[in-house]
Image 1 (cartoon, rainbow over the protein chains, first blue to last red):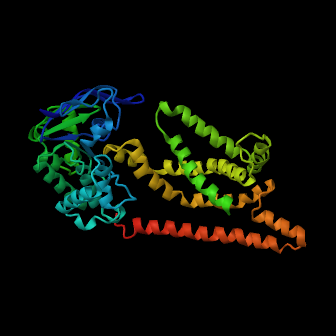
Image 2: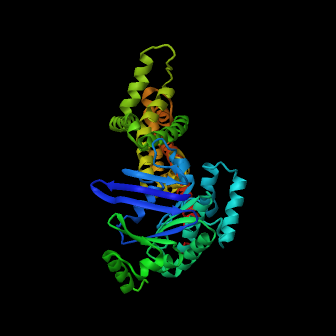
Amino acid sequence: MSALTIENLHKSFGKAEVLKGIDLAVAEHQVVCLIGASGSGKSTLLRCVNLLEPIDEGRIVVNGDEITAPGVDVNKVRRGIGIVFQAFNLFPHMSVLSNVTLAPRKALHLSRAQAEAQARELLGRFGLADRADDYPDRLSGGQQQRVAILRALAMKPKLLLLDEVTSALDPELVGEVLELVRELAAGGMTMVVATHEMGFARELADRVCFLDAGVILEEGPPAEIFSEPKEPRTQQFLARIVAAGRL
Amino acid sequence: MKIFCISEVLILVLALALAVVRSLPGPVFFPLRVLAIAYADFFRGVPTILVITLLGFGAPALALKGVPTSTTFWGIVALTLVYTAYVSEVYRAGIESVHPSQDGAARSLGLTHGQSLRYVILPQAVRRVIPPLLNDFIGLQKDTALVGVLGSIEAFKQTQIDQAATFNFTSGLAAAVLFVAVTIPMARFTDWLVARDRRRQRAGATG
């Protein structure tokens, strides 16, 4: 069964149509990378799947349930879909541990002890055990983003959406975040990843989608997209990336 | 002092409720939002002394059954009505200063609007507005003197009584000292709260 199916998704902000009919299917345990220039609609697409943006037209089906149907409990849907943002968006007034335990406690109604045990286990597994009691501002950008990913994982989502999670980081901090994502992929997490890290997309993705002006212009296995792109726009985009030394 | 303490607690709670009502999203809450805005506009526009005299002299004069005639009671009601309007605006500024991405992050985890407000938005908003909140409470503390026009005995009224009896104005100085003795420790306490919070969140920041 496909973990995520998107059919004919349209989304406008005012008069600007940002998504012009997106069709996408992601199988369970698959990693799909979205590439494309800024403004091509990658972030909006991910935000729509998490229902942070209401859609204008089309359907989104997650694990067999149509989440865009009227009357759906959006809070329940979001509990099963994790999203991590470019700017981390950790809660600055809470310790790392509280950041990770808030949603399991309040949305899943775990006891504080249960939630904390689970959070400490997660933090420990990804090398952040000694940061549990720190406030986010005391962490490096890479650590903050790893905490943000773990905060999403604490909800045990079936599907994880990563929205340019390394774009706000200093180059030397990108590696630790990618390493964490790599481990998640190895663990079988279904992911849709918007990224500018082409090397990463090539290494990790089962499939790469090139977004241009609100449509998926070209998609296929990374070897195909990166080595022999068919569309002129894709060729142009990748040529620029190569020229910038990013591939 | 009694008038100040009771009104302060009422104001803190009611103003927060009013600010939350104004932040409710969607067309469903439109009438509530309009009411909240009308309330804030009205009571910020009317002079405090007018509200106090209107309620303090007017309400008991109606001689309705069950309506209290205590001037202290009506003084508290009047100050609470007026200051709730001011303080709700302070809260609202705090709520709006929290970046929408914080709400986005909370909602994306499956928290409801109410939970996001309660655990993510309001704690940050209230921390930010502690200094202006204190500003309004110093104002409130001084305005308790206005309730004296109703005949309720607060510090300023007491000095007038003493002055009339003794032709000695030292009691006025004593009252001034009394007011300042309350407001200055409050100011220092707020500074301490803000500094502690900043230390906890920012110290040793590497990003």
